[in-house]
Image (cartoon, rainbow, N blue to C red; front, side, top):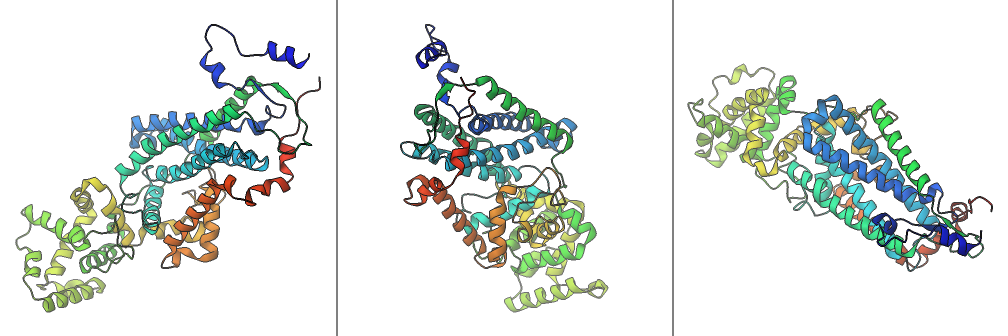
Length: 479
C-alpha cells in the first residue's frame, strides 16, 4: 500500500460536518507515535478527569463522608492514588519531551505551558493535603504557611485558612490547569508529534492507533482502582487542644501564659506578616476569658484588675504566674489574688472540655482554624507528632505521609524528595532564613525549568544524551 493510498483510506471522516472527535484526534503520527511514550499525554488527561470526578464527589458529600464512610474512604484513596499516577506520568511525559528535544522551535511554548502545568500540579497537591481533615492537613498547613511567609506571600496565601485553601484547590488552580492544558494540546495538535532532531533517526508516517490509546487509559484506571481498594489513603485523626489538655494540662497552662506574655512562637514570629500579625494575648487569653465573664460565671473580672495595675505590678504578676505554671504543688497559690493566675486557671479547664477551642475559632471565622493551629504549634504538638511518624521537615522534607513507615503504601509526596535533600544538606529547617532560602531556591529552579527551551547551551543538553534514539525508535510492523 503506497502512502497516497494509505492517506486516502485512513483520512478523517469527510461527512458534511466533522465531529469534535475528528478535530481533536491525531490521525497520522511518526512511526514511534503509537508507543507508550507518546500515550503519556492521554494518560495524564485520563488521570486529570478521574481527579476531577473524585474531587467533585468528595466536595459534594463532605469531609465526614470521605473520612469515615467506607465508600468515602475508597473515593479518597482513588483521589490519592490518581495524584500519584498523575505526577508520575507527568514526569515521564516531561522526560520524553526533554530527551527527544521536543521543545525546539517552534514548539517552545508547548514546553512552557507543560512546565507551568506541572508546577501548578505540585502546588495543587499541597493545598489538597490541607483539606483532608486529618493530622497531615494540620502539619502541612502550618509548614506551608511558614513557606509562604518565607516567600513574602503570606499576606495573600494562608494554608491555615480552610476556606481560602478550598477555594484555591477547587476553583483557582483547576481552572488554570484546564486552560493551560487546552493551550498545550492546541499547540501540540498544531505542530504535530515532534520529529527527531537528528537526521539519522529513521521514521515514517503511520496511522494513529486510537484503540491502544484507550486500552492504556483503561488499564491505568483499573490499576488505580485496584490499588485504592487494597491500600487505603492513610488517616491519623486531627489533633485537638482538648486532647492535649486531658493528658498534659500543664503544657496548655504554660502555653496560655506565653501567649499572654507575648513570648510564644506565634508572638515572636520572625516574619511578622499575615497570618501571624494578631495579638496573642487578646486572642488566646483575653477574648475567651471575657466570654466566660459575660456568661455570668465569673464574679470578678481578673482582666480588668490586671489592666488597672501599674506596669511594674503587671510584670510581677506575670513572673509569679510562671512560678505557678512550673510548680508541682499549686495548693500554695490557693489564696493568690494574682489576676494572671486567675485567668489562666479559668481557661485551662475550658480547654479540656473543648469549649476553649470553640471560642477561639469563633473569634474570627473568616480565617477558620488559624488560631487553633497556631496554638497547637506554640505547644510544639504538630512537629512532635510528625517526628514520631517520621514525616517532619528535618527528616523527610514533607515527602512522608502518616503511614508510619517509609515503605508503606500508598507512598507520600515522593516528588518533593529534591526539597528533602536540599533541606538535609543545607539544614534549612533550622536556619533563621531557612523558609525564605527554600522558597527562593525552589522558585529559581522552577523558573529555569519553565524557560528551559530559551536558555542557550543548556537547551542543547539532550542532544548529547542517548535516550532520544531509544524513545523515537521505529516500532511499526514491517510492511
